[in-house]
Amino acid sequence: MPPSAAKVKWAMLSKLVILVLVLAAIGGLTGAYFWQYPWSTRELALPGTVETQEVRLSSRVGGRVAKLFVDEGDLLEAGQPILELEYPELDAQRKQLEAQLAAARAVLAKANKGPRDEEIAAGKAMRDLAAAALAKMKTGYRTEEKDQARSELLAHEAELENARQDLERERNLLQKGATAMSAYDAAVARHNRLQATVAAAAAKVAMMDSGYRAEDVAEAEAELARVQANYDLLLAGTRQEDKDEAAAQVAHLEAQLDELDVRRRERTVTAPERAVVETIGVRPGDIAAANQPLVTVLRADDLWVKAYISEVDLGHLRLGQAVDVTIDTYPGKRFRGVVVQISSISEFTPRNVQTIDERRHQVFGFKVRVDDPQGVFKSGMAATVYLPKAAASSTEAPSTAAASPSSS
Image 1 (cartoon, helix red, strand yellow):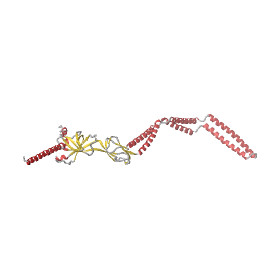
Image 2 (tube, rainbow, N blue to C red; image 1 turned 135 degrees about the vertical axis):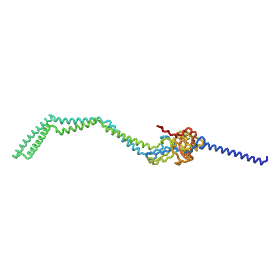
Image 3 (cartoon, rainbow, N blue to C red; image 1 turned 30 degrees about the vertical axis):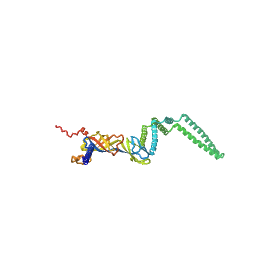
Image 4 (spheres, helix red, strand yellow; image 1 turned 180 degrees about the horizontal axis):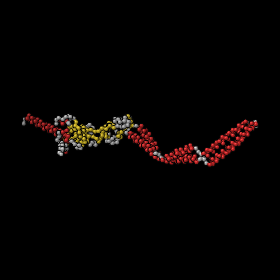
């Protein structure tokens, strides 16, 4: 064979091999394409986005940021401290309430225990003293006291008679010029003084004979009633109303203390559940206002993929259905998921659907819960949900036949 014919044959053979390889590659790509995308006969590939619940943590009290216990990106457990605020005024208020509560509890204990034994004994002694005074007034003066008063009256009368005689004698001597005027004046003064003494002694005898006045007896009776009532009050103890009031004051202060402790616990911001720290908006030394978002976290156990399915394929989807999920970070790995929510309202569709083709633009959103203990999924990632078409066989279409009314 001439050399030129061999070269032509070789060139044709090379082109044939290249053509076969190109066709094989095109066939492989086409097979892979139809294997992965929605028009596959075995499953639907539905695009979606990874979403998670964002929680903005704050404190109901303000204060200066004292400590930060975590960094952005940390995985937190429920109850784990995130940051701590300084609020020394709350500690001072608690000490004040503790002192007030101690005083109120002391008042309540005193009310429950009632008067002391010494107070009751003192009240009894006052009652007995007032009773004795009243009995004395009602009985009157003793016979010995009356006799003593009469004896004193007789003695004063005798002295008065003696003074009268001395005065008469001094008057006669004065008329004769036999005595001095001063002696006469002294006799007059002595006589007058003894007259007054006799009158007082006579009044005392009359008083003892007539006894105490009715007004004095009434006053003694009133005093006895007063001390008797005070003694009865001591015996009865504290009124129930006073005990209830003291107990209510204690309960009021205890409730205020509990309320203050709740506010004091608010100084430490903690994780409400397992979560990932997304952003920290403050640093030590910052002043944080009450109810101001301080830290943003993402709920670690509340991760899902939001995807959409066309109305014509909605029959393949049901709640609780197991599906596969992939993300671009791990394109060859499938994660297991469960459909947890299917929207009841369509999206991206006109209000009046006129043709069957337009129904394909009517889609329904649904959520797939994904178990991700390693934290592979991140909020905002693109994801693909693979929904088996075989699921449609297990879903029965709702019956549209209406029950016919029974004829009477």
